[in-house]
Length: 97
Image 1 (cartoon, rainbow, N blue to C red):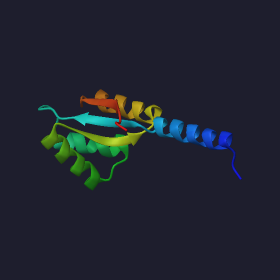
Image 2: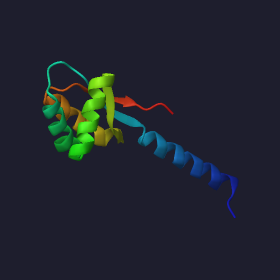
Image 3: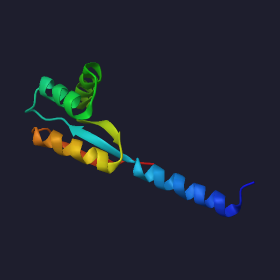
Image 4: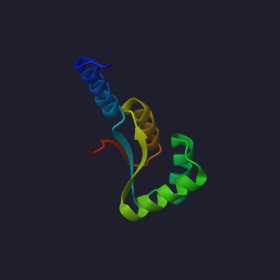
């Protein structure tokens, strides 16, 4: 049998967990980088399969930006830095709830 305090604590833990995983790594389209360079970057930096990276590149090109990865800020930040170090625009954004 759970008490009201235990239930409240569980809800707080679930809320904190949801907040920790509420970031998106956004890659932006540009007129400088080739499809091949973006695809290679997504494979090497984000661990995407070739097919997944190709699909992301197509969406980035057609929509102007795309969330290529979701997760905790501390995990996404080094990926974002590695992408921007390769000359590709990338940002980390808080996901809408």
